[in-house]
Each structure stands twice: as structure tokens, then as C-alpha cells.
Length: 287
Image 1: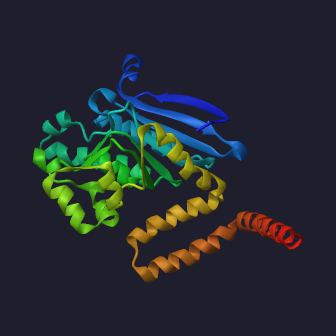
Image 2: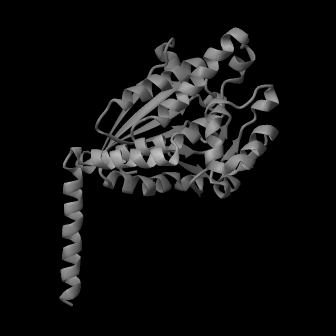
Image 3: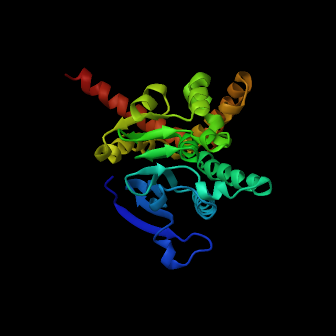
């Protein structure tokens, strides 16, 4: 992306000193576009361990994304993993191995909160996947609205191989790839390629690694051009549809449509589109 203005913020992990900050943390880069369009790029950085999620890093992610949620200027977020080996390689296996009956609940709840922070961010979130997206990493990707992957990316849910089931946002998989393929991933713990993930509907776009940012820009451009309030309403409605029966989902949609007219955004944008169509029609008629 070619930003008009960039700002980088390294958010220090809780319980770390500045010297550690360069090794594990969340890098937030703010990007300003024309007409006040504002993006946030988040990089999950634990590259030495395939960006695996430990408690400190997950707590930081929840707090960082929560802070972005309250920014009314924000239009889009892109989340990636540091380096070229992994998006997120899963939850930290050393921390998993140290869990017991008393500590397991708080740990897996934190995994859920980490994924849910992205899922309920009020603007679209694009997962930029380059390398491994395994376990909690795949769950985090599923919690995003769109997924763009490099050809070298690998996907899987290997939890059963270490004696635990795949849980929390793994529940989103049937809606993306169906019950049969979900069973295959979760029960075998096997991995699939980016090409298979695309064919299954697990990711939306697959490109060469060098083309990832260009592919994300192609998705970002129409989102940024759309009405900012309409985009937020649409995401909220989509999340509601995932939970509601059909009749209730339709009613929710009617309410959402009416809410769009709480501001002048529909009038302004529909009026501009109408003017453009009329100009085009006059130009065609004059030929």
C-alpha cells in the first residue's frame, strides 16, 4: 500500500521491559489515506517461535484491538505475523504443556478473547497469511472477515496430536468449510496447502508471497470507498446473521437498513451515484 502518512506504535507487552519489546509484541502501524480514510496494520511479533501465542502476547492483543475498537475514524484493519515463516503457529506449546485442570480454563478463555477481539472489531479485518496458520492461529484467521494467503502457507488444527481438542473459534470452521472438512481437519490433525484452503473456502485469495500486499490492496480499495457507517452496519449485521434464525435475521436487516438513515450518508452517496449515472447517460446520448 502507498500511504499518505504512516505512524508506527510498538505496544509493549505487559510484564516486559523495553529490551524485550523488540522480540515479542504487537506492532501497530497507522495509515492515513485520502478523505480521512484510516487503516490499522497489526503485526503479531513472536517470530522466534512462529508467532505463537503466549499469555502475555494474547493479553496485549486483546488490549490493543480493544483500543482500536473505540476509534470512530478507523475503516479497516489488516493483521499479519512477523517474518516469513508463520502467520501464527498456534498457542505456545510450552504454556500448554504446563497447564493443569485449574489453569486450563483461564488459558483457553484468553485464546477465545484474543480471537473474539478481531471478530467483533466494528470494521472489517483482513488476515494477511504468509506461512503457518495452525491451531489458535487458524482460529484467529477464521475470526477475521477476509483471508489472503501466500502460496507457501500451510493450514491445520493439530491439537489432537498433543492430547487436546480444537475448541473456541474452531467452532467457526463449519460455517466456512462445512461439517465434513471440519471433521477431517480436527480429527486427523493433518495440514492442508494454500491451494486446498482456497478450494475449500477457508481463504478468499491465494497469491505469490511477493503479491500479498497488492492482493490486500485490491480488497481494501472498495471497502475504503464505501460508506464508513454502511460498512460498520454491514459487519454488525453479518455477525448477527451467524447467530439468528432466518426470520429474525431478516428483521434485523430491516432495522439495520433504517438505522443507515440516522445520518445523511445514504443521501450523500446515493445522490452522488445518481449524478454520476445521469452524467454518463447524457454523455452516451450526445454521441
